[in-house]
Amino acid sequence: MDQKKGQYKVASMKLADEGHKRIAWAESRMPVMMSLIEKYKKTKPLKGYRIAGCLHVTKETAVLVKALETAGAKVSWSGCNPLSTNDSVAAALADDGYSIFAWHGMNVKEFYWAIDRTIDFEPNLTLDDGADLIFTLHNKYRKLAENGVIGGTEETTTGVKRLRAMADAGELLYPVIAINDTPTKWDFDNVYGTGQSTLDGILRATSILFAGKNVVVAGYGHCGNGVANRAKGLGANTIVTEVQPTAALKATLDGHQVMSMKEAAKIGEVFITATGVNNILRKEHFEKMREGAIVCNTGHYDNEINLKDLKEITKSVRAIRHSNEEYTLKNGKKIYVLAQGRLVNLAAAEGHPSEVMDMSFANQFLAQIKLA
Ligand code: ADE
Image (cartoon, rainbow, N blue to C red; front, side):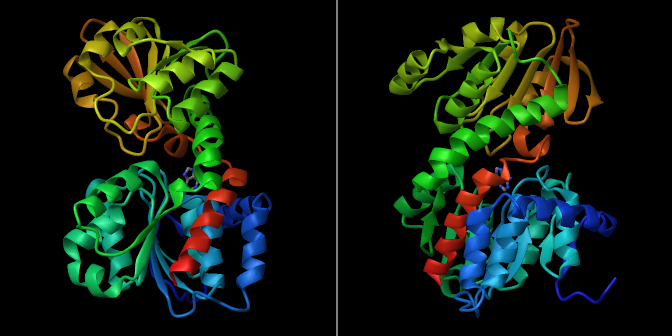
């Protein structure tokens, strides 16, 4: 291998060739990003900026990383979820000389180790999905957050919520642009991206037939809406649980059955959490579920399915196929948990399709230029 300029820790450099081809495929589906690269490659508006990024390492993210460097920035990257890194893409980025610290299946300690490595590089801009990088900077590298970083961008609903709370408490040390609030992000990525990629993840982990299944979607925000409507399109009997009255009414008018989780737990065959709220599926629900029920989450954090509760009533667990664990309960019933309760669309599949990420990442890219 040639001498590379970037530092990296990835699963295996042997996967780089596969990663290069995946990235080329994403580029062929991301016309907005490709035109922005063309537009800014000569003027280099990010020259002199060091960007630390903490966002799922996918083929689409690779296009964003390349765009930022083509526009003049130096970039250092980590994944924002222990199970979402595509190892071939990480290897291809390392092979091309980018600084990247990410591999699929990292543990929590390694996850924060990787973020620390991107901060070693003393960024003056940050790019987050879930705000873990910003939080780490505020908690552990306060001087840099106060005096070094001039601004950041945040991709997702959960991250924006966390940061708004910090800003309201007067604790946010630098301005952050909420990418999620842009219509060309939330109206497409959250709805059609999450809708399709969540079902993609479930299908790759289970290969089930959706038609005729009772599919329970917890939450009818943009993501839950996307998931429920795609599942309905595949012929599922969709059931929505939602505490917010107008969202619940919307779900009813969109043709879904609406009920409490207490009721839905008894009839659901597939459960998908999309709320951003913790403890949605708990012991009282697992106890009522039908034999063979499948449970998964598509929210940012792995706190929506209470696996501790499930383990308490479980006799044994075995991996039955990729991203699919069979829990045999003490009463003999089997429940299947996908992707360890982490976001099923990125852990079991490849996340949102390139066409959708094209728009989301165009917002990220332009926001970084705006901050610079
Ligand atoms: N979030 C959801 N899907 C994604 C993807 N394909 N790449 C990066 N972040 C994502």
